[in-house]
Image 1 (tube, rainbow, N blue to C red):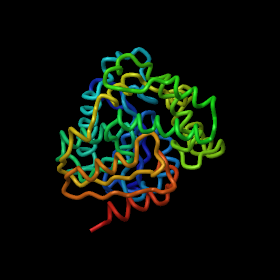
Image 2 (cartoon, rainbow, N blue to C red; image 1 turned 90 degrees about the horizontal axis):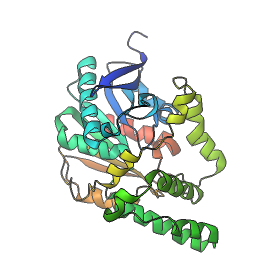
Image 3 (cartoon, rainbow, N blue to C red; image 1 turned 180 degrees about the vertical axis):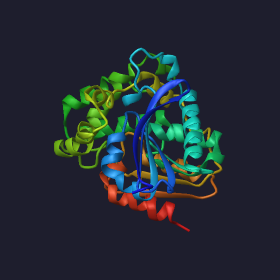
Length: 317
């Protein structure tokens, strides 16, 4: 097809070489830029949400320090929130110019929702709408709610080993942010969330393999090193995640916004995000609850997710 595109390439953003994949059945479609979460999710969006390529020109971008955009000897000072926001702005302008669009759609997931909200707050005129999946609100409060939920669940199940494990993990607070080993702490909490269903709804080994690992292992654009980098955590990113409380600092935006959230999400608390949604002022806003999802609605309920993006956001009057 003349207007079809399937392209993977590097581009310099903020003087750092960064990788993206662009796919679409028709390059005249509206552009949708994806902001992945704490680890690269390119493979997962391509696996579970590729139907969006029929309706959008989808840009699967790997942020600086992530996946194929990883540079071995890169300066950690380049991994700042401000750098990421300017990367998004620069990439957005590139996409607008290349595909001759006045504005594009922006979609963020998890950590990507912090980047997305900050970006639309600073550059609202670049975007038709912002789609937020598992929106960050108050990271420290959310983390402590998750901590308590894990501890209570372990107590209900009488699992003394997990109780001891959770109690050995430091609670996060403004006062101790610079003292925590975030990589170790995050990995420990994620493992417990997987066990108790707060990362994936009704989690099992088979579901973890199918939903989390297989997409990474089978993505043709990844070599072995890329696959290892796709699950890598970065201390700098985790730190600025906890340092930004959006619910008290960004309460009004100038673009339509759509929240999508899994009800069982332990990583970013569902009720706290709903509280933020109610507080947030926007020209238009809608909240979509996914009852059979935890932290990953696009991958756990992909058909429902894709349908909402197309029929209730893109094609809605």
